[in-house]
Image 1: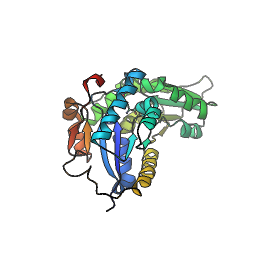
Image 2: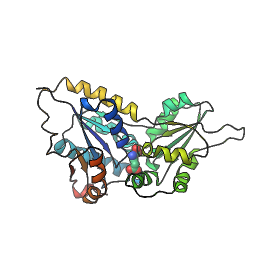
Image 3: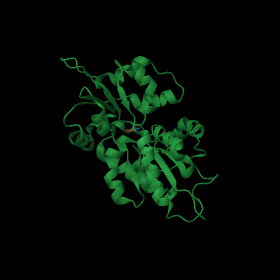
Image 4: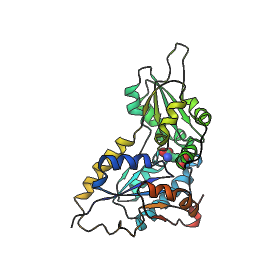
Length: 281
Ligand code: DGL
């Protein structure tokens, strides 16, 4: 009997919900979706590169044994620019990555000034520099690592109040106005948490800009990859039934904090994926 491919959406926290929601909208019925938030490692934005890469690899080893997805969507820019290549060379399962959408931004800008809002880790990675050199070398790219914006997005999603001034302070450095009057006209949301507070970002922006949210493109790519797996599968979906978690976190505190939100988003029940002690931050 044919079964639907099992697609795991993975992020450090709730940010991947921006991609999961797009997946639901665009073709959720064709796949079994589950969600993993590495709550024990959140936020990824300030981890050193090598330590984070090791953690992500250890986490995926655990995922392959316990969750057993057919496709993994790394719905996290920081994880993708840190570990996509080693993940692909270590595991047989296909990985769909998420990187700052510099290429579409380079096409969309008229002023030639692009703002990229991402985590501090993402702006430091060579991968991000390479994207700029390849696609936007002829433009001015203002890369800004927002230290607290992912955390503010999680607070907002948990229903806690977030001051508009705090969001304004986090995004302001991505906006540039040159002496000749040209100013940032395109803003790339280079962290999957940010589309979840897109309206707050728009309201806090010093002037209107075109916002680039890559979630629909990532979701389309994930569905294409899943459709390829589909042809190879013949057994029932034993890994993803009513008794199996559809939502995963990596610590008990994360289960308390994010559990109700994941359930609300359709990822129920929520289980804790145990990481060996040495891999904890
Ligand atoms: N959502 C993640 C990203 O796209 C990272 C947020 C964080 O853990 O700092 O980069």
